[in-house]
Image 1: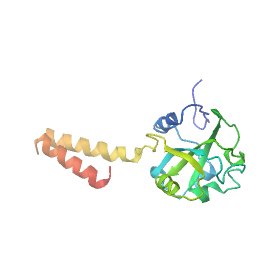
Image 2: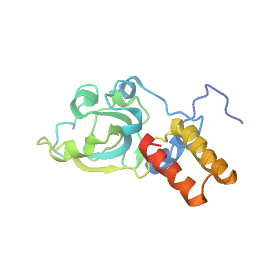
Image 3: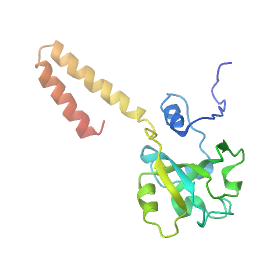
Image 4: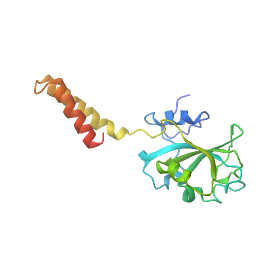
Length: 175
């Protein structure tokens, strides 16, 4: 069955695969209230896996009770317990030692939580290649590339010269 606009697709799989899903044009991760309230810009966010420590402040409390987003600067997307996803809203799940939290967090989350004194997490790892794609930069990149190619075809400059100008403009513009 084909997906239509507005359909919700539930995914079950490795966290690294979620990063791949984020890169599919037109496919948007469900934006919960907690994720949308984050202070980080969308392009600076990453998916992070964090393991709840045995004697940390999170054990026995729900995500809501600890005010996770405010306290840790990340939003809980999913919780895995003993290798299986806990099928409840993350805010209502009573956390246990060893739970693996899939978080949407800013670049600063890992650094900030390495230096925390409460030791809420045993392990924190960024999901590789999980930053959202920057599709808004595609158009400027294509325009600059085509511009360089057209300048070369009109013999206004050498291929190397036009390519260097295009590269310098891309870097200067943050493309």
